[in-house]
Length: 352
Length: 216
Image (tube, rainbow over the protein chains, first blue to last red):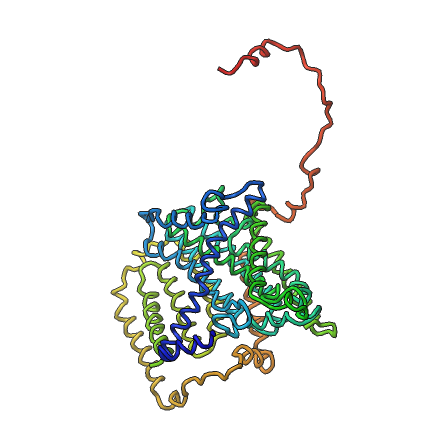
């Protein structure tokens, strides 16, 4: 059916315009559910943290508070957008867009199911790293353009943190790249489909690469400026960091970008370490063993739950300890494990 | 005109505009951001000739890391730009002559028949299933291993040099070592003193009456 629709587009609109329209349609099919997921991630967060603190969480708007994200969105849309007098106006309003745009562009290479990917490029993993590293500009520009000390300090903290943890993250990905022998995200998932236990949970990357998995997950939390690494917006220290001068929708755009990035880390953790769309059961089991997009979504929900669990559990890191963790703990751990895995792959006991 | 050509011209125009902004912008932060934009646009142009590895590493290394640190430095600077712009017009004639000579030289190289630039045909699209990265990686790690390793050693030496140049122990710094800090046990900081649960109080004085009064 998809092929028929694709050919229909090409025949009606011609090759160039048809390709354009077809790609646009695919982009919308990714971005629209993503925005829904971003909106409902806030409700998920408030509910989970609520129950962890023995409260109920939002339950007034709609049944079980299900309409709360929509109410929040409407409120933010209708609020006044204030432009500080001393701010550099153009860059001030460009900054939230610079956070959101890369967060959406990365999704182009994320595979949801076999063949269900917007751009199945060979350098998918590198693309993800390159584009997600652009998001830091939004933070710096926001801090600088606000012309405020709090915003600038917050931006400096946030961007130094993001750059530092990107290194550890990159090294963790080198391990995945070595065992997969490919930078293509679909190939990385398929490679996890054979091995111990016939492609079940036992053959996924997170078991042999466990230290790298942990480093990637924790660096992902730091990368998205989430608690316990949220010094960038530490309420008790620098109020809201680089977002302090923003209001209304321009403030909301930062959060859209942040939550889209969190979902991205969830998706990437699932794809790289937890077998993507593969089932945790052996492929020989009839229904349960079949690969499906729902497994991927379930894994993403699980990683998201971990993010919320961390937030509800850990106190905020102090800034120097946070930098120490990134540079002096994570990078050596990943380097040692990469060498170990490389040696392992040369022995007859290699799993790959 | 194919879609690729349209994209090429759009991005080429953005590249030229942003490159011009780098040298004409009054504010150095705007100039640095324009440089970021021109790097990014250059990466897109490389992507169009299917050099995706080069394009992505340009974004990853220069845009994602180097320019961020560059922006840090530029934002922290406290310079009076009026002061710097003084005397621009007195230097202008000489600078213009230099620029014209440079441009003329480049044009001469590009149009001279002996450089043989005509012989280069347009980049042929890669056949299906050929990975650009593998094509690049295999020669680097086989034929060009020694130069590649030497370049890596050079970078390492530069890195060590940069660290050792800036490494200095100041006497008055109040540096705390987090590694030491997290090793602290309760007994290092806290002394528990045994005390009797009930202690003989002296005779209640007149102050006791005041304490009994309800808050007004």
